[in-house]
Image (cartoon, rainbow, N blue to C red; front, side):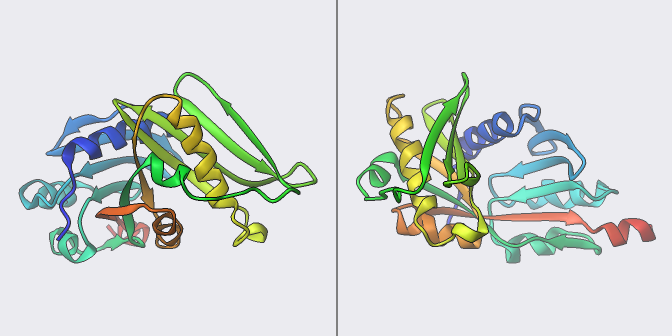
Length: 220
């Protein structure tokens, strides 16, 4: 069983908050809490491992949807700690890699696309535009305490399987190299995990998301 590194998870959480414009994580109820304050998410609790003594009472105390528990463990390990009426989302995966593995792999951008890099003090953005100037793919990186976190890597549906995701990753890795940082981390979906594995990333831990269902909340 893979066990997440709490320090890595804490740095990833800091980067996630910066990337999404959320409040910075604070220690609360045995985990890290990020107040997101968005229509689709009130906030999230992040646990680097299964802590039944913290997670079980916390889940029991939550009485609304859109307040998420995020645990670096499998769904099978998290499910027994949840009250009735809770739902577990599609699996996620924490993944790590040295930046060098992406820089050493070919990811040439097809000539009909254009790569654009922008950024501010904390976030570097990469976009790939098609011939009409429309966004075909995008992604971003955030540097936190010697770690580069990749976030929001997306390819438009009509441009899937064209190597654009790989090109975005390599372009961002090249930008990160200029900061002198060697290690990278991201949270992947099942589909994203396939891409990142092909680029040399390794599984760090499972990542399970749970929340009170909206239907249960209406009944309570």
